Length: 236
Length: 242
Image 1 (cartoon, each protein chain N blue to C red):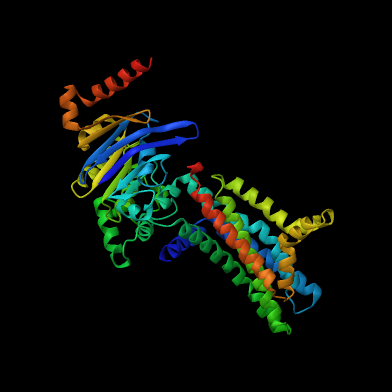
Image 2 (cartoon, rainbow over the protein chains, first blue to last red):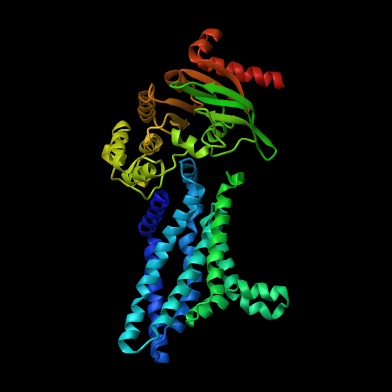
């Protein structure tokens, strides 16, 4: 456990030592703020549902920037050899890296919690719906990070990792749009893996076991595959 | 201390190691000598459990590496060919990170870091970012992380490659100062380096151990210097192959 925290701390510090972290933070929060203002000003409702929809979509662009270097950089610089020859389990390496990225992502989400206090000041929002919405976008980000880290473990090239992550996340996000072309089991599978079907429920304040299972199992599968991927000796 | 039994390694079709066997005793400084691509790094990676052998076994302290890799890794300090450094970290932060991963007890971490900073003469740069250090300093930081947990075995892959003569002398001095306390394995293709540091030599050619002798015995047997012996062995083998 100590090693997981040591790796997570190192990852988190690495974010703040690179300009990418600051650019992501500043750009993300600025864009979120603009959307928040436009949506609240236009709808005049004490509700963050539309804001969450924008955030959901923007995470597709943000998360690969955070995860592309996680393993790709270690492999390229040779530090993977260092990590894997210390008495640290591969699970601890993967979990530590995942935790570091998740904490950074949580900081972004944490900053946007000010939106709640703003609408609370001006109206009477449904607290539980907003809380469920935050849970939804946090889980979505957590799944995106797990996918990004898995893809980063496949390559030494950060650009390849980022572009591949964009492709997978776009497919996951827009797959629901292709559902009309499928029927039978394919339709069921696409409906299940499409992220929209699940985050939509949570941002509307509906927490279902199926949605939670979707995110948690998705994260779990990605972490297990990442562990297998770094164990794969072929690339060494 | 270290026993390799019939170790073979394939990378796809390429056979990188052919039936490699050797024994290394506690406290020895052993030099792996060979041309580029001879298989020195592959042997070292197998010893550190970074790579699994295709066949054969490696035992360190009586434990098989592939079955007890976590326990074995605690005994080993390893410097890969390219020092594995996080360029955005300071020297001290990096060593602290290495100490945590290598199970140095929390209370001893500061003392241990100060000790290796002293041993590797890094005190003056401990708060500097690694990316701005010279190659010699980076190499010493690499050695410092390898000895941070006071390992019984030190494996150094070409520790002086790419360094200027002054830095080479400094790094060699550092390695020499570690003898008696630890078993040291170092790989190099610089013959004089082996002559100055090692007690024993393993000459590796095309994945095979062609010589495994103490330096004293080897020089006595051939009645020549190491450079001549190395050339003779390689040329003889090449002539045989032709």
